[in-house]
Length: 71
Image (cartoon, rainbow, N blue to C red; front, side):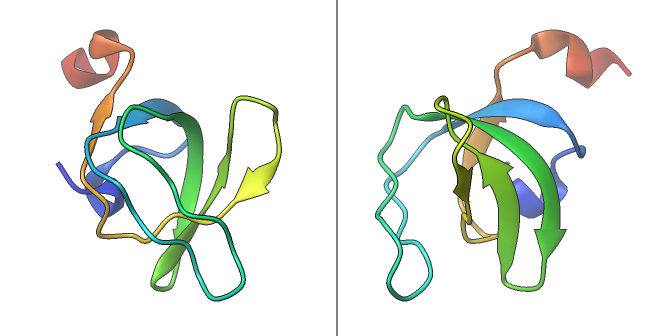
């Protein structure tokens, strides 16, 4: 699924490498991220070190907690 399809405040795992916005780091397949919400073409997220990051909204991801799919 794409990041823009995810529920807010969920933990996700990247299924592909993804570029960040200009002057931001690149994200790598397998990274675990806490997704907060979409803000235009990018999102507000936190990495495992609780550093704020901005993933592109069209990044392919999967939920880490499969229970989210049951809700």
